[in-house]
Image 1 (cartoon, rainbow, N blue to C red):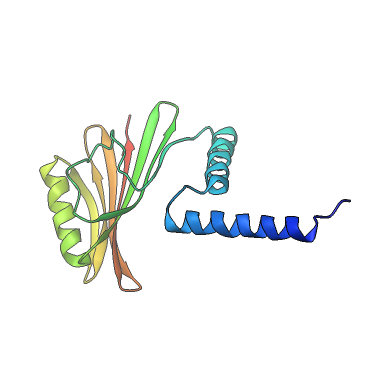
Image 2: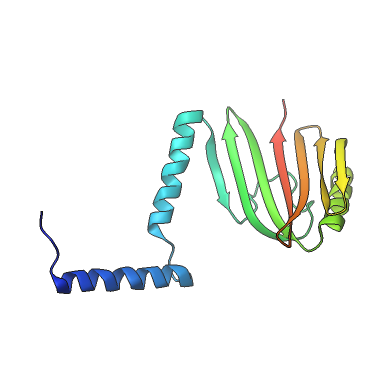
Length: 157
């Protein structure tokens, strides 16, 4: 097996450092991360039949509760499709768990959803909702000094 010369190893090491610095600084996307993410999506579809149609920090355009969720910084947004049905998951970092849970529930009521159950605690809660075309699980938690709101919205038959 051939080995790299000292100068080739130095050049390779420098190139890796530059690429890593650019990736960390946000100058370019990480091609290895992109390839791994795409291969994971393909494996999920091949194994389960579930198609990951959106995955990132932008709420998908077809998210049924767009404009009706609590204010916060979107940290994860995913859409999955299987057999003609979709499920969306949106996670937001919110400023206050207790008020986000109350406001989130009020927003679901205003959007025409019926509360099936709710468990409210001092720092958030979990609830389940039914609508005409979608069911919703709405959850707000606090962990490590961060308050997180999660919406999981699924199409119903």
